[in-house]
Length: 540
Image 1 (tube, helix red, strand yellow):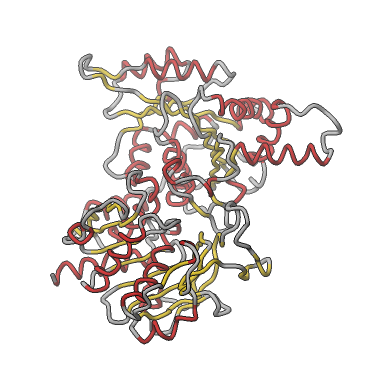
Image 2 (image 1 turned 90 degrees about the vertical axis):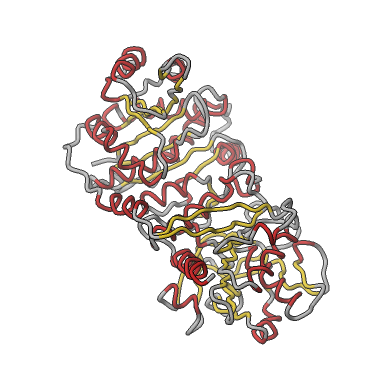
């Protein structure tokens, strides 16, 4: 049976949760025995989000194959367990780059290159490519209906329904039903206008997913059905939830997956939701509370740490612990020590540039000297090594070449490394985009190390996103003061993990473990950190 395509669009306002809705629907279809692929089509003109500020679109999610993507791919992976690939994420910038490259090669035989058909054809080619074996392909269209940037994508999916037929294409539209306290009711007019805007480009929504803070009365469902030309059964409430991992069960209770299957004429096989019930049970049956501080410089926008926050939640769920997070601005917090006074664990996350470094280094010193369980990630590992060099080895000028020229390059720009394609080389003057060590790389763990115990194996694979690497020339001296190099690339040239031997739990990793954590498969480092944090609390 050929793949069926579900397109998820958004209306009324941004940030309603199209990515989460797509991920939850995928989880429910999997629970009914179907295979899924999830894709994101982003309307902005950047080639990828790799060089964008975290304040623009939140974190950059990295796949195993090294694709830098929108954070929604993190939702997709966490809920479906299906690893994203380069074929699952596209931006308008990439589309235009591809089309213009074809034009320069003469592929269009001198034709006038236009949005229709050339851009829309390239969008359709992307949507239809590499879908073999998937029962459902869920494609989220970024942005909001009415945005000029979205129009080519909407035209492309309108054409696809004609190309593939109604029995293979479904349109789901996510909107907002605001509650007006003075009127005492949910208002349907914004949704009506949004559906009309969608209809104006030739797309009739088949199902409405309505974000709201309370159940939708039947009268409002009938009203939406009448004015938006859908059946009342296809008006689904997307209720607010206190934890996103409850949403699949909420959607199922509303009949979301049932109506999708009915649309495609599929037998209504029962959904096996035991996995999600267990996840919710782990949220509800906690035995304690731990306080974890994230010391970073993007804390004004929590989406910058989306995967990290979720991975900490997963670690808490595995230990039956509620995780209370505090976000400490490493650049602006005037008293780092006071801010960390009552925490049970610390995370020093990744980042780029010198801004906020002093605050992170101070937090690392406090974590080391006060024996607070700590996980340093990417830049956090690099700063862990710099702090040790400055304060334990007394190398006052210990620094990173990322901050400028230095006589003591504890951390330096990578110029070459090995991957499956062979030796990769970079230079200091190269473009920022695409110059990093990206994607999954293997790592060998030191026998008897803390991380080997956490992973319960000696060989792992983790996702990277960095340009700079710790200098192994300082390894022996760091080992002499208790900072052990416990993970290396298979060729032994790139240090991947450090840990303190005389600390209850302090690990620094060059990779991003948060990207591979799942609610039903918590990452071992976050499970270990949360357990150590609870033990620290009990001893305090």
